[in-house]
Length: 351
Image (cartoon, rainbow, N blue to C red; front, side, top):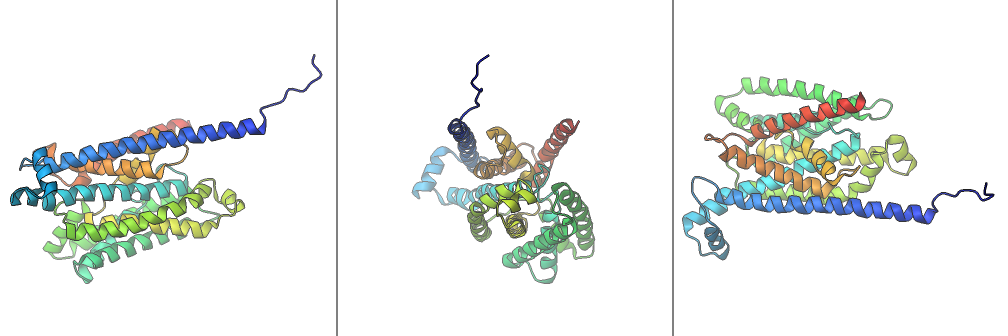
């Protein structure tokens, strides 16, 4: 028997192995982001050419060069382009919002639509429509106020001995049911025209999207997206739990409030324009995480996957069946199937 002790790997070898693993994870996340970006580009071009009025690739080149006929320019630039861009931007915003909540609560079922924040934004939008007017800035302010108020109520009710993700979700589901009932009651007591307008929003739709509405909404979303990188460190610490985050020097309550405010702002901006579009925020973060095979949700890849999901759903809502339907109907069908699969998978882990 040898007198020398068997030594494990040296710290340098461990650090080198960790660095190689991080590089591999970053490469996978980058590959997912690049693949999603290419699919988004192809879907975007497809959305511009599909429709009752046929558009060819030559027509698109003429539009870019400014030599297209007035009718073709109108169809591409005023009818199809704003809708396709809105699908990309709104899908990315919803996906990042869901990624923030799932990282913060450490639960793959956490998303604004499941926890009632989308319904809160919808309630605020209905109240703004009833008492203030149909102007975009009033609807956006109402949606943001409703979403933040719903988030504050859920946060305060769930805040007992630290914020637990499961409790946060369960209370959010209860608040969501209450808000959905309140929305139905409000729609039953208003004029028919207002009810029809609000109901169309409630299904989640990109119909009638125009540049006049898209650009201010896109600017709001862009500003909020620019704040997300500053949350990456605190979110990574929060994903370890409140005690571990506090021990590592994170300001837990401040970081959580900032994360909730940004996530609610993203979903509220989308809801004010397109209504509550369900399940993009739930499914996109987990799809990107599983494709990248990472423990954390990759934000860039998640945003691009969300953009692909919403644009693909919108194309399907317009062209798969003979009668166009709201895009929210398609996302509910696809998201419902995904949710059933996710619940079965999580139940197998527990058992």
